[in-house]
Image (cartoon, rainbow, N blue to C red):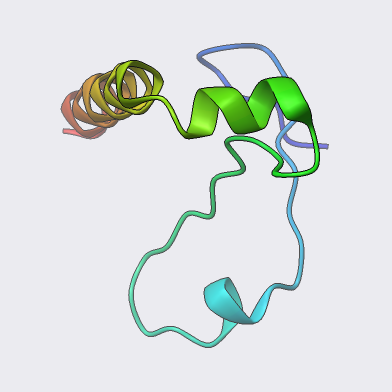
Length: 68
């Protein structure tokens, strides 16, 4: 099992077409479920979307810096 060096959590993989059938690097993120009332409320919130997108951008920047 692979472990994320940043969070010490197990990394998961799956045979998704979105990841398998592309010629470029890809990451598939699961950020909430529409059938969960609390998560749906968050997904529809501009504040939540901005919070998540800003944090993802920051983490991607950190990972890219660490890869150099």
